[in-house]
Length: 445
Image (cartoon, one colour):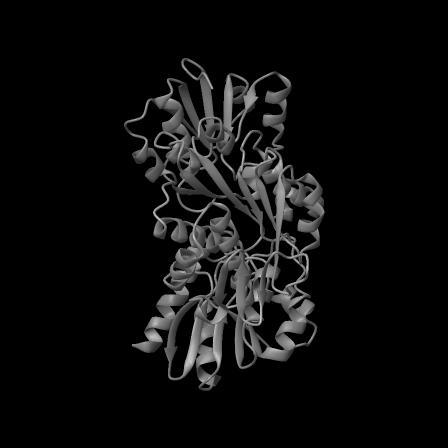
C-alpha cells in the first residue's frame, strides 16, 4: 500500500488501534484517530501516542470525519457494517481492517488459527513447539501482539502464528494462511454478526486465499467445519477425538497420533478433552511446518497452560480450584464442566451474549453439586437450566466462592466457567480471572 501523504483514519484506540496509528505514521500517512471514549477515559492511549504525528478525536467518529479520508482502518471491535463505513465505501474511500493492512506487507509463511473456542491455547501450543524446534517467526493476532507490530521485522523464512477472530477475518481480503486451522464453530458474538450463518462465513474466510500447496486443518466432528471443506484450495487434514477413519489427526486409546507423532494424552499438562483437540491441531500444524515428531513430543510435555483457560489455581484443603474465565460462551463452559466427572461446583454467569444456556443442563446434571450463578444473566441461566441441578444465585464471585468453600468436600472441584461475558462486573475476562485467583489465594492463606 502506498500510504505516503494519504489521509488515514484509525477508529478505536485499543491495542490494535495504537499499532495501526504507529504503522501508518511510519509509512508517511497523515493520520487521525477517533474513539467513542473521552480524553480522560483514554488517558493511557493519549500518553502512548504522545510522540506520534496523529490528530486525536474523542467522543465518537462523525460521518464528516470519515468522509474526509483516503483510508479508514477500523479496529476489530468496530462493526464492519457501521453506517458511516458503508457510506465511505460507497464513495470510494478504502476501508481496510487492521489485519488486511498487515497482510499486504507481512513476509514469511502463516499458520492461521480460528474457531469459537481454543484459539489462544492452540496458538500458544504451536508457538511453543516452533520455538523449541528453533523455527523463526512471531505469534500475533487476536490476543497479544497486533499483527501490524510484527510486519516490519518479518522475513521470508519465518513461520508466523496468527490467532484470528471472526471480527478480524470479516474485514480481511488478502491474508494467505499456508496452514489454516478451524477448531470449531458454535454460536457466539451473535450480538455482532446477528446470525450463525454470518458468523460461520466470517470464520471460513481464513481459507479464501489458500493456494494448491496449502493445507486446511478442519474439525471432523464439527458440522460447520466439515461444510467448509469444499472451500479449501489445497489439501485437507481432518482431526478428531473419535478417531473416525477419515480423521488423519486423531486421539485413540489415550494417544495423540499424526504422521509419526505418538503422544500420551496423560502427558499433556493441560486438562480436558477440548485441550486434547487443541493439541491435535498444534501437532498437525507443526508437523506440516516440518517439525520432527520427537521435537513435538518433547515440547508438548513442557508447555505451560495459558492463564484463565482451565488454569489450575490451587488445592485448598483437598478441593481443587480451576479458573476458566475465558469460557465466555456456552460451548466453552460445557467442555470445561465436562472435564470433571463429579463433585463439581460450577460458577456461571455474567453478561449474556444472546446465548442458549440449555446445553449446560445435561452436563451439570450428572456432574455438579450445584451451579452458583453470578451477574446479570443469573435469572436467565436458572430458567434455562430447568431444575437439572441445584441453583444458588450468589450475585458475586466472592459470594459464590464462600458458598462453595463452606460445602465442598475433599476431592471436589470449584470451577469458574462463566459461559458469559464479563462486562457487567469486570473490565474483561482477565480481570475476572485475576479476581478469582486472588480470592482463592486468600483461602490458601
